[in-house]
Amino acid sequence: MHCGAKVCIICGCLLLLVYWIGFHQIYSTFNSHLQPPIQSHGCPQYPLEETIAPVKGSRHFMVAAYEDHRERRVTRIIGINNREDHQPLNCVFCCADNKLVFKEAEIDMHSDHFGFPFVTTDTLCKEEPSCNATQVTILGHGDVMEIKDVRFLPIRNQEKREDAFPYEFTVCISNLFGNYNNVLQFIQTIEVYKILGIERVLIYNTSCSPLLEKVLQYYKEEGTLEVVPWPITSFLNPSSGWNFQEHKGDLHYYGQLTTLNDCIYRNMYRTKYLLLNDIDEIIVPYQHNNLHKLMEQLAMQNPGTSVFLIENHIFPKNYFDDSKRFVLPLWKRVPGINIMEHIYREPDRKNVYNPTKMIINPRQVVQTSVHSVLKSMGRTFKVPPDVSRIVHVRVPLQGHLTKEQLHVDAKLWEYEAELIPNINKVIEKLGIVD
Image 1: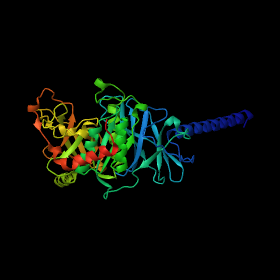
Image 2 (image 1 turned 45 degrees about the vertical axis):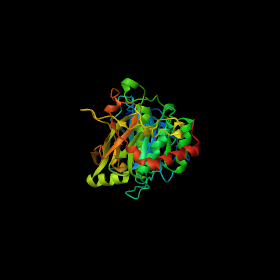
Image 3 (image 1 turned 120 degrees about the horizontal axis):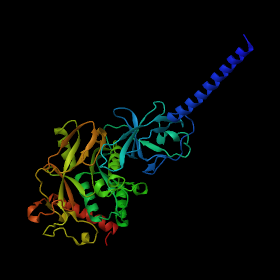
Image 4 (image 1 turned 90 degrees about the vertical axis):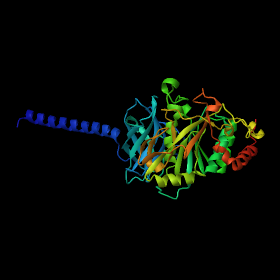
C-alpha cells in the first residue's frame, strides 16, 4: 500500500473519530436539556413556602404541588400560565435520598378562562417509583442546569385516605380582596355555617381591612378558619370581575379559578364534603336541620354522585324587613351588611338559568370552574331549590321589582336562638365596633 493511501485512511479515521466525538457531545448536551438523568446536586433545605412563585424564564406560576393517587400516579402542580405560552417545561423531583430526578412536564390548561390571557393550569409530573419524592419544582428546558437557587414546593397529599376524615364539611371561600371590610356579614355567615355543621372554613386572602384581620385571627385561634395568603397582585394585574371584555386584566376575578382548584386538592383527604362558594353566599338546607342530614339523604338517593349543584337565589340588599326585628344596637356599630334584615328573595325568571355553586366529594373531582366542575369521576346532581338553595344577599339582579313582587324567605330566622348570642359573643370579645 502506498504511503499516500495510508495517510488518507488515517486521516479518514481521525475525521470519523472527531465527528463521532462531536456528535456525541452535541447529542448529550441536547439530551441533557431535554430530560437530564438523575443528578446528585442535593435537595434544597428550605422549600418554598410562598403561595405563588414564578417559574424562571416563562410566564408560568406555581401555586402548590399534590400527589394524585387516582387514575395514574402523578404529582399535580396547580398553577397559572399565559395561554399563549406553550414552551416545554421540566419537573424536577427532590428524592428521599437527596438526589434530583428530571421528568418532562405535561401541561394541562383548564378549559375555562373567561377570555383572560392567563389561565389555571395543571402541570402533571410523572413520578419515578424509586424516588419517593418529597419536593418538586418546574424549570424551562433551557434552565435545567441552573438548579442551584431554585425553590421547591413540598408535595402534599402523600398519604391517601378513603374515610375517617378530620372534618365532614369544609367551606372554600375563594378570595378576599379590595381591602374587604364587610365585617358583620362575615361573622354572621361563619356563625350560620357553624350551626349548619361546618367544621372548617378555608379562605384565600389578597387584602382585607385591619378590622376584618382581627376577625380572621379570632376564627383561626378558635380552629374554625384557615387563611391562605394570596398575593396575586404582586405578580399579575387580576380582574375584579368575571368578563374580560368588560373588566379587562390578566386573570379572572383575582384568580378565583386557581384558588378553587387549589382548595379542592388542599382538602382532598381532610374533609368528606367540600362546599365551593363566595363569602356572601350561604348554602342552606330547607328540609333538614343541618348539612349532615341533607347530604345523608342526597347521597342515599343519588349513589355514585360526586357533585351536587345548589341554585343561587338573590336576596336584594336594598329591601329590608319592616319589623326591624334584627336591627340590634350592637350590630349597628359593626361595619357591613346585616343579612338577617334581608328576607325578600327575587323570583325565578322564565327561561333564565339560576347559577349554581357546589357541594362536592373532592376525591372525585379533577378540575372545577366556578359554577360547575370541568372534570370529575362521578355523576352530577342538581339539587331542587326546595331542598337546598343559596342565600345570597347582594345588589339586585331584578332591580325593577318592588318589595311586593319579591318572595318572603326568612329561613335564616330559624337559627335566631343560637345565632344571635354567638354573633354577639364574637363582637364583644373582639371589641370590633366603629
